[in-house]
Amino acid sequence: MSRFANLIRKDLNASKMSVGIVAAIIAISMALTWFNVKMGSWHEASLIVPVGISLAFLPIWFVWQAAQKLNTEWKDDTVYTLQVLPVPGWQVLLSKIVSLWVEYTTLLGVISVGTFIFANPLIGAIGTDTPRLSWILRNLAILYLLSLVLFTAVIVFIQLSFVVSRMIGRFQGLVQIWVWILAINLVSTVGRWLAPLFNWVPRIPMHQIMRLDQLQYLVNVKFFLALNIGALIAVIGLFWLTSYLFDNYLEVN
Amino acid sequence: MNLTDALVIKNLTKKYPKVEALKGLDLTLSKGQICGLLGPNGSGKSTLLKSVVGLIKPDNGSIEIFGKSPSRHTKAMIAFVPEIDSLYRWMTIDQTIKFISSFYDDWEVERERELLDFMRLERDKKVSSLSKGMRARLKLILALARTAPLILLDEPFSGIDPASRDRIVEGIIRQFKSEDQTMIISTHSLGDTEQLFDSVIFLDEGIISLQGNAEDLRLQHGKSINDLFKEVFA
Image (cartoon, rainbow over all chains, first blue to last red; front, top):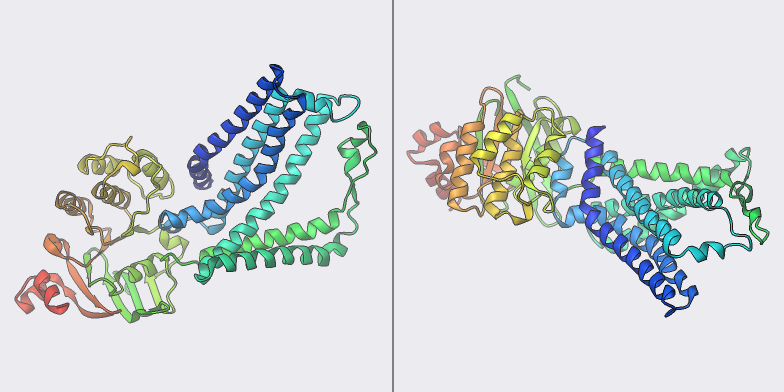
């Protein structure tokens, strides 16, 4: 366990500078917008700009980081150090996923805290009656967990496509795109195939869990879990496949 | 497999798209010796060492390290120093040592301290700020601070200044425990390092062209291993 923790710590240390810079840029842009609104130079609606840009930027940055986590090991030749360690491939790959979770959580935390501090009027604009803080925190936590699952699947696709492209060694960009497409296709197909097995799982009324009835608009969202259980199994299967390929077929030259 | 054998390789073959690096190589290496793996660039030395450590998957043949095929378990028995710079440049020397040592049960803190002093490296220095010679010395510390039964050094003297080279040679002599360890050092320029080797293997285009006890070869051919190397690969 301490070996696994050390792998995570190493990955976090490697990216702390870039995460720190991005977090600082987000916080500064929010503070700057708030200051200009307070001084009356900018309209209050402009408070949404840094929040919106940060939230839109986050997934792009996240995908980039996921690709870089493995790519940098090859680019810097540190893969020689990594591959001779007596640890299974799944620990190496999972440590990168966990470190990405931490980075994602950190940046989302900065955006959330920044929104509460500098863009408070935006929260009031969510509904006619300002939702209670507990409502906002609860829904943010749910959205955070759902996005984490989605992003984890994305990391698994990225890792698989990277490992396969390294194994083949030629046309790496093209191979990565193809593996990526095939992986997404496989996950959705397996999800559909396995869905009948999990039809007994009730649809989750998200509007009730997230208490969307507290909004002025009628929102009705049901989460079809049966389809997603199959897809999740497929993602876990792809992670296992990536680890197997990493251990048994990946060469370092 | 004999109980005294550290490494047994049979019919090892490895082909790359444009070259056959190993051509059915057979090799048995007994425990407790320092073996020089000698050959010019492209002779298959690195491929052989990488195959043993598990970085490369051979096309054919078998490798046994103390009776076991290369796996995660044999990785724990091998201390491998690659030719290229494989260290995390953003780490300090101390962070590098702590990171690597956490993966091995055979790490000896006392040896680590002794080697750091001997190699004249300061713990708080960043890897990115070290010279090539200093990085080579650090890589050697990472291998020699362990009591790994098999140590593989791939071109440890390549491109190193004479002072660092002497330190590395002396470090190897001081730390090598012949009763417990076996070491393979690959090099393409022998120079004054031949004193290190108990036995030598001359590798030429993926096959062994000459092999034997270093002293026996000197007596048999009436010349130093360095001169023999020049003659064989002339």
